[in-house]
Length: 272
Ligand SMILES: NC(=O)c1ccc[n+]([C@@H]2O[C@H](COP(=O)([O-])OP(=O)(O)OC[C@H]3O[C@@H](n4cnc5c(N)ncnc54)[C@H](OP(=O)(O)O)[C@@H]3O)[C@@H](O)[C@H]2O)c1
Image 1: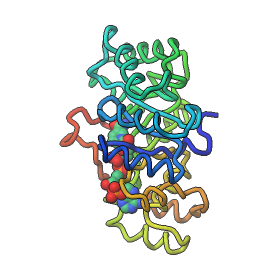
Image 2: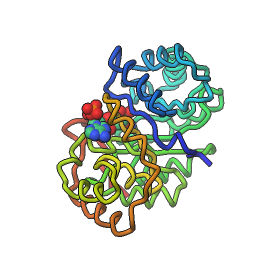
Image 3: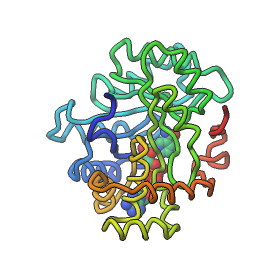
């Protein structure tokens, strides 16, 4: 089983770097996080590596995910870029290596071949994708001989990702959520406070629990210890079916963080 208690709640690290990253990550590890989400694009792998190197953790105690950007999608660049990640992180292999974005309208298969090659060379235990549409998930599933363990996508209660969820079940490629609290936008909706009161938790915890209860892992980022602790403490209560449905109604909001204004290559999520 790919997800185990611990790695379904990773600490997101974008856009932290330098001292801010080091302080936040040390606090997150102290709070209890044992999984970290980074990427070459975040330019913070060296800072993550420093924190881990001076910590008391063994390598096997912490689950590390990183991602290869499309700029490295070539036969010459892909593997050296992963080797550079490992050097900066001061580790010999990643727990999970993802391709960060699909290559625009181009064929996804060459980058998946390099991804599998990295795994075959022992640079990553597991491999997966990020920002893949349902169509690309099906192509990837059909193409890869090695299992793809996750598709990390924008996933929160203000965006309908039911098609991706359906495709995750079909393909066996689980979803992982980024922008889980929609960078704070969810807090404008009183429904989460109402449900939170009933469970004696916070609105953020309700949002994260709603995601986890659909079998989707989470990667929340916070610079504040109290928020980090709340975001980690989300396994001790259950939302009822009625609560799950009432939150799902908000997905018609259609709010996106990584839209075309922010990321020109943003996916069309419901592309079949
Ligand atoms: N694969 C991809 O393309 C992709 C894209 C984007 C992000 N990611 C990954 O996903 C991670 C999370 O996404 P994100 O950081 O963009 O969005 P996010 O986790 O939805 O939002 C982070 C923001 O929410 C606030 N926040 C977090 N927990 C809170 C709480 N309990 N109460 C109140 N405010 C809270 C934080 O502020 P404070 O610091 O003040 O707590 C921070 O400003 C990233 O760090 C990155 O690792 C991946």
